[in-house]
Image (cartoon, rainbow, N blue to C red; front, top):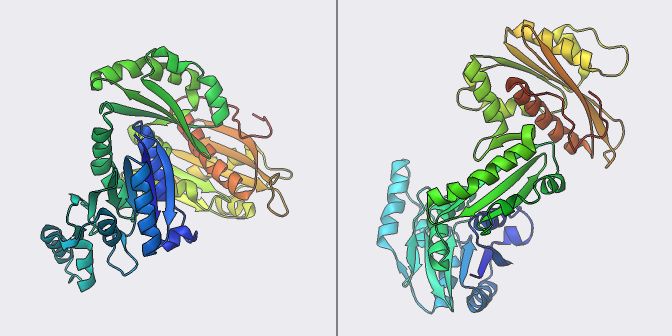
Length: 424
């Protein structure tokens, strides 16, 4: 089935906002075995929109239109859809009532211009939006079925997954029992993992399991998409492939499916009845930020210490500054001192010594981190290059992953693809 995605809005066309909606739509369709053949971006112009709709209606079987369902004068999707479909716009009383209830529950009066969101083509099928006022709808234009979705990301995602994708699968005739298995890893690059997993798809000879990747530094998502007669058939096909992926990627798998690295760390700490204190430099406090807001973190997260200057860290925890370069031993001393000061069962110290000068591709940082408990301390030294942001993101992920490894009884030090110097 040929699918086209049309994204609307001057702010998208001019680059004032990054079009993350298209990326999300395309990935979700790929996950269920549907590929996007064309992507079109159109501004808030009636003639341009009409031409885009009509062209898509001649070459695609299904079209997802994103944006243009709001209450303002530049939201044109309903109007142009009706024109392209050759029908009139009419007020959908049911959706109008739903919008009025939406505002009433929030003790607000619905502005008059919101009525525009209930104006739909006469031939439209309503697609429910359970968390917003923009009414999604489907209509035929030319040879294609068009599915109109709001531009607000959280509304789009809910509607895409619950409403649009099931309709697309039914229209395509594909087997609807499809399951996506995801493995999240840190430390191995995409090409490395691709080589490590050579041949895993062949474990299911009928080709119903597909391997794919999504790299978003510092993590890599390895995806297995499986189709079958029913969920039992899908699980049976996935089982040997999943086992082989776990075997080959080993300790580098930090989470699976909807799990997150920080969620895994928090769960491990919670299971032990443990508490955590964190010392960070240069990370903008992102290690603590990844953990502290999670449900249940109030029982685990004890304290975070953030400073840009290493001297401030040493002075605050009462550690004598090192005479020379930053070392693992210094990080160990800081972690021990932080644990004693806070009374936490675990303390993580992440100290970063940045290169001097302007940001550049060879700009890097030396990272020394340590995890201290009452009777043990584990530490690691790493050097990452690639620019300031690359170092910052890498340090945050490295620290959380080392804490995850320590809690799971795995080696804290294991060479990654992102390190320049191999030092234990």
